[in-house]
Amino acid sequence: MNEEFRKIIEDTKRLRYPYNHLRILAYIATRILGDASEIKLLRGMAAAYYTNGYCATFEVDVYSPKLYNNPGILQMLGFKQHKEHPMSPWILEETDTVIDFVGLDIPFDFILVEIGGDGVEILSLEDALAYYLSEIIHWAPSKEAVQRVNIIYIAHQDRIRKDTLKKSLSKMIAYDSLKRVSPTKFSGKLSSKLTQFLEEITREG
Amino acid sequence: MSLVLNKFLSKVNRFSEWMEPILDDSTIVLGELAGKRFSQYNEETERGFRVKIDRLLSEGLRNVKIHYISDKHHVVEIIE
Image 1 (cartoon, each protein chain N blue to C red):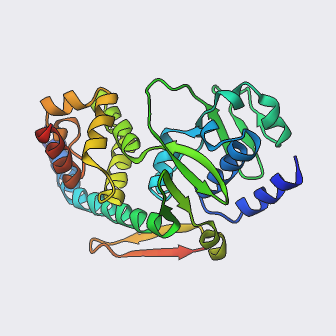
Image 2: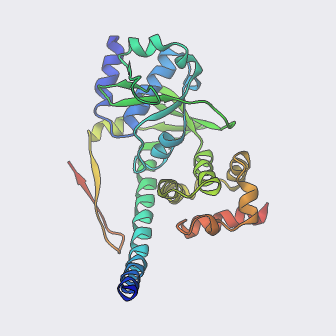
Image 3: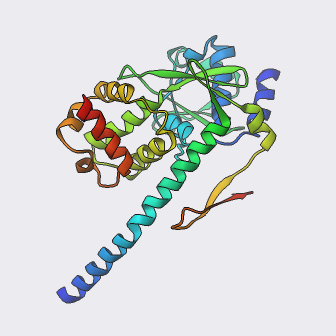
């Protein structure tokens, strides 16, 4: 582990969740792999970021072919791979950062999050909301997914763009389902404002 | 037996009806608080957001717990 990274770890220990993990991953993406776009964060970490950590996740789902193909980088930084777990996650014990490598099955949109002069990419707000909405629509509405969509929507209702969310929902093959069936049929626990917002999107489309 | 079961189910239903608005309130409170904190710790940029790391670091490590959520949307944050 180099001195620079040791300093980052010390700073990270003073940061609250989920910014602590973002700081570590932004450092690796920008200074080790060369660009923020080399690490893309999906699902749970995106939900944690947009909800100030109120919707937490134990592991960070990471899409990074460069990092996946160069495990020596993680070893050099002090991560250890735990093969006894089903996903064989990489864990940095000093900060409890757990990385799971995942594939990209949907052409998601990502945004740049800059932290401490470095950067990392995170699933866009609309894609994060649409991802959990599509989970509710396509599968049984889990408590976790309902909680995530409600909190993300309430926290960012002034930021979420209708046309972008419509595109995100279409990308996840959820828009047509919403157009045919009212959101309340998929889950009776969706926030009434979110339900109204989704109805407006489908009505305008 | 069925009378006992019916009484029990009726109690469960009444409990669910009573719980529902509180669950909804707590979600609203968490959502509003998350939005407020997100705006405090992030500034919008052309391509996304910039985390105000100095602000986070100056506050030090805080484990914030939602200690109590009343039906009047009153939230107490406990700093540990």
